[in-house]
Structures are given as structure tokens and as C-alpha cells.
Image (cartoon, rainbow, N blue to C red):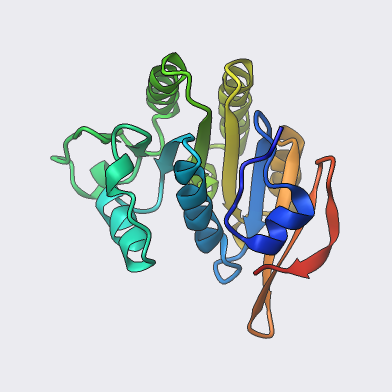
Length: 222
């Protein structure tokens, strides 16, 4: 089965894209291009008729849409129908923030139970429509900062287990510079595969481990 195309030509040629039903950890620092990777993946996946549940922990849903637009990615036609946002950030700064047809405002990063329930509900709606579903956590670092890491690990094991049973693909974005090695290692153990991104001399590179088509030496991403 053809994988989920990321929109990056050489990544997709070397890896056949991302495998459905797997859990991916996307590692890199702030300059590595994690956001660019995710945004282009979203564009490609939506064009291929996948559905996406996007979990936000470090920006509001309106800021996310603005960022997509600034990169020339028009997600407006997909909002609600194929692209739903779980905003776990806005209420921290704007207690009066309210839901709309495509974004649900959650209680904040400490309410992992609320996030789990909302994620399950959004996934169920898409699965009922027989759509391939991708859960994207952007980014996991904020959940790890606000909660005891062990609590986050248990939460992730639960949501990943449910997602796999439903045939859902999961992607975690993590800022490696923000966490000690033991946290990164535990996230790797929860994941099936790891994508590492880095910026070097003005160029961005990737490597991929844990899949049938691994790229174990850094390659420039194009």
C-alpha cells in the first residue's frame, strides 16, 4: 500500500512516504524545519483525501490557519469536513474562547483526560466516514513541560493504543532541545518510527528509522 506522501520529493522517493497505522516521533530543534515538514505533510495528506485531527499546544487555531495561509497553503476548503483542530492553548490566554465548526477549545495542557475524550470523538467521526485518519500533535513538548512526564507517557500509550486499533496514524512533534535524553528515549520507545530533522549550513536534512525503508544517514530534504 502506498504511504502518506509528505510533499517533499526526495523524502517520499526514498521512504515511500509514511506508513499508515504507525506512530511517528518527529524530532528536531526550533530551526530544524519541523513546522514546515508538518504543514507540507498536511497539505499533501488532505489533497490525497486523508482526514486530520490537529492537536495544538503552543498556538491558537487562528494563528495556525494564519501560518498555513502565509505559506501559501489553503486549508479553508477542508476545515470541519476533513481537518479538525483540538486547540489546547487558547483558553490559557483567552478564557472566553469558544468552539466553532472546525476547532474545539480545550481546557489546557493539564487536562489530559479532556484531550483524550475530544481526540477519541473527532477520530470516531472520521472513522465512521471511512476516511484514513492522521492525528498530529504539535507539539508534544508543551504537554511534557506542564505535566509529570510519566503522566504524559501513560496518556500517550493510551491514545496510541486506541488509534492503532482504529487504524489511525499518529505523529508527535518534539523539540529535542527542551528535554533530557531520558524523555526523548521514552518517546522513541512509545513510537514505531523516528524522523530526525536538522539544519546545517543553511540546509535542512532528515533521517528515518523504524520503517521498512529506513534512511539512516542524513539526507538533504527537498
